[in-house]
Length: 54
Image 1: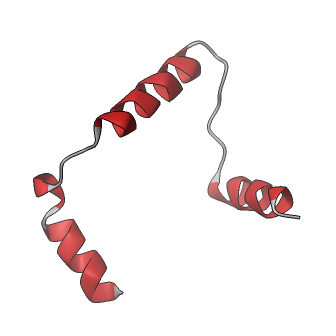
Image 2: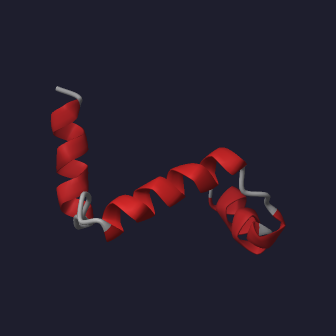
Image 3: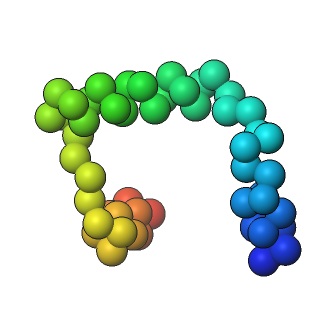
């Protein structure tokens, strides 16, 4: 896995970002700017994911 990750990091600029990723990012960025969404710390995010799978 480490080898895969290292290779991915070395070639990140060569990877194309799909248009649907760009659209999702734009919506989420707009929601943040409008105060409809907020960032949470990683520990909180992990707990929210665990809770949603119960």
